[in-house]
Length: 479
RNA sequence: GGGCGCGUAGCUCAGUUGGCAGAGCAACGGCCUUUUAAGCCGUGGGUCGAAGGUUCGAAUCCUUCCGCGCUCACCA
Image (cartoon, rainbow, N blue to C red):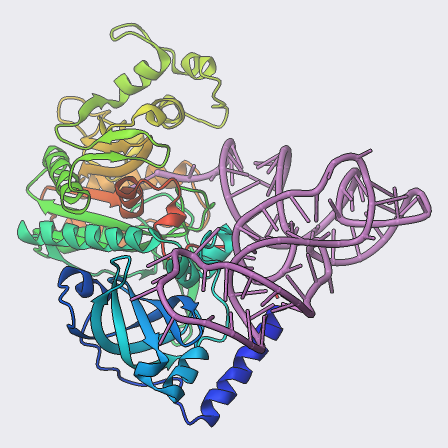
């Protein structure tokens, strides 16, 4: 039957119910019990008052079984005409799968032993006008699952669990950092100048100020201003926005954790990262062994493998330590197109990202990045061409990035200028205000960024970032 | 933006070599007092993503477009 006709039929039923004087969109319902409590605390004859969605309906003439589902689980209800009375039973016969009901009654066990609520009072709390997806196969169409996530949540078991895990992971991260004396702060998402990363921003406009603004691509430069201001242990866990391609690892708005710790350095951030992620895994997965979206086992128990940027490139290219390495030759052997790279460092970064990192399944720290690839990181004292930085890879993807923060304003200005000279993007300008802040003195500090969506992918074993974002970005629906 | 794949009833899916548009669930009517994807009898429901083309005849072959997915490119 055409959808419009089904809706018309349901609306007709609504008219019939209204004529019976029944309220179909009730207000407050004094729910006393959750469905799960019937199973956790079963006593024959125990009185219960539950509410939820009708998810299955089996009628047998003058009696009917139905399943009522709430956030805790489902409970079978049993409605008899000789118990509830003729009129209420007629009313129940006009209910459909999908309706939200309140039910009151006593528990008993059926012949097959299922704990069931024998109903003596029923109330319709919301009448559904549209059919739910098929009950057995659920909702499979990927586009519909994302565009109408509420249907996905109703019909596909496991989806809700994924997002519960996401929420628990995030609250565990906050509790962990709070417990270590870090303070959560909020910095602007709308910024006059972009910085803290190299990425294409979204642009917007403030009418009253007549000012063009950008949605932030990273909170970094504002968090460092707070280090200047005297906050010593801070974090921000919120959205950033990048106007770039979508993929199973990229959503235009994504959630990032950034942590700044004064008087610490990148090695402290390494330890912090290990402890934080292992702790979150223990809390939400019950252990440090997880399986990623491709079915590969990942062992998150510290300590994690550490190797330098150069060694990672050597490993990918099969060049022994100590041997001389021609990076363009290595790239050629690996079939990488590096014609767009203007320096050896960029070639090496290409090798790392394309050839080396996909093999880092268990968490792996890559350290000592070249300075030109790291404009905000402090250089090593023993080798000024490398900096005190690491990236963390797991499941073959970048998960975190951290460094000892550059707090030398003169050097920072030089790095910005070099970055601007090297072409980069249109519309970039030097963030003078940030350099001014550094000129007032920023304590040495370790800084860390973790991609929360990707972390949740690993914790929940999902292959696509869209499975861990409730409403992922899709092309706007054309009418 | 390029390459590959997919798009059939509200949902999940069949559809043979180009030859009447199908099933289950859902819906509607009826029967049924312990069902578990309840069962039984009956009814209705289609712009086969859209447009064009080839053909006596197109869901099926071709072209273009739209949407989605994968992938490449882009992308600290």
